[in-house]
Image (cartoon, rainbow, N blue to C red; front, side):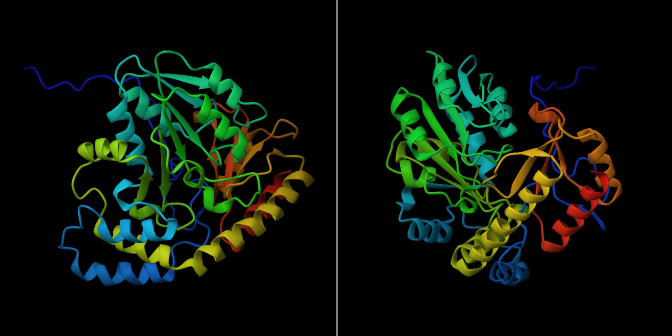
Length: 358
């Protein structure tokens, strides 16, 4: 008897930050770049309120959330698209703009979702070499061909934590053909305070060949509710909305996201906490001779080439102590781990355990 067969896709499976755990009970999870302090209390209150009426469908257009995003960032609400996390928007981009044998350029060490969704559409992924774990605009431009359709960039970058300064990224956009879509992932933009950095939204909100994505999963602490958004030209957003399923963002997520934007004090508290612990972590890593970058996200990429123990040994030892960090094998970075900044209690425990090892 013949059965239906799914088409075969040459795409690696995404392994999330919980991949090594059978249970999270009693564990410290520093593997997924989640918010250190969690959601705004006002967002939690709204979630509890709406939970009493889960039988209702969400607003398919997400009008209230679009309104407050537009007001908060001085944008045109007609050019905003909402997604079930920014991941969904990235997938819609690939579905809308790519066909078989097209080419997509991504930095060598970048968010794995870019290449996964591109390959699903049959596109060829071209990796632009980085220099000292920093995205090279020169190398990206050297990869451009007649087949190039999209360039994906996260700024600050995941998993390296480095950023592209505003002059470089402006140079990139000016030197890309107008028919190449530049996608700038602003997922970690809230955490960076540097005079040479401007978010994609600040630089390119008026350009017709640039799409900017943002998420409520990081600084706003709503990773479990899956809410993200994108901003681009009306033509681009309209094309994505044709593929976007109705009711793609859940009702609690939409309403909690509105309250998250309103609660600016909580966002400032999260950012202040992360910046404080970035300084502490960086000093500890230097003392232990762990190679790392000066990071601009809520995480560190740690390289263990100059210490006596391998990343695999350290990963397992930390796991045994109840701390989960992220292996970097899937990103192609050898002998390395990525650690997220957690609560003060979690951070102290992590520092204590890694000092015991090194």
